[in-house]
Length: 196
Image: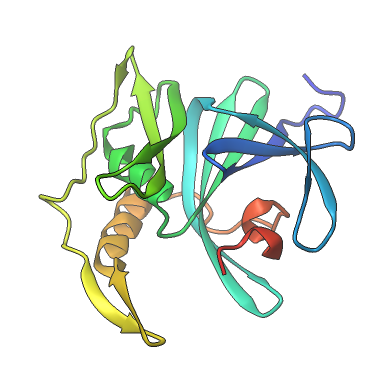
């Protein structure tokens, strides 16, 4: 156990098709953010542990609302919080499999790039338990279809009906867990790492 008898908490994000953790100066790979600030990060392709909570989290950064899914996993004395951008492909991959994940057993999450038929690269997250890949519970067949809408003069896909289903499923699986935790600084809440 650590000196303070508390479980250590590590915050993880997804960046460039890898799980990423910020480290101390001089450790890991140095990266310069848009603001000019230098950070050091370690990357890896796999997370292992038991999922103990999943929650939707909203924070504000410089007047902008940032929404994410925080996935809390424990592995011995360490707790890792994986922050996935709300509505992202990696969040959708994870949430689609969550109903089929046995929460009483360890799960392995892998992250990797995938190029679709149109050549556009996306980040995917898969889950493995008991030596095999966890199938998606939610598929195109049992989720509402995406709709095209106009947003600020641009045509975009609207996934809000699907997100309602994911939110209900998460609340059903984790009814007694707190919805909010104190804010933490990670790549998901840093304006240099936001998609806009």
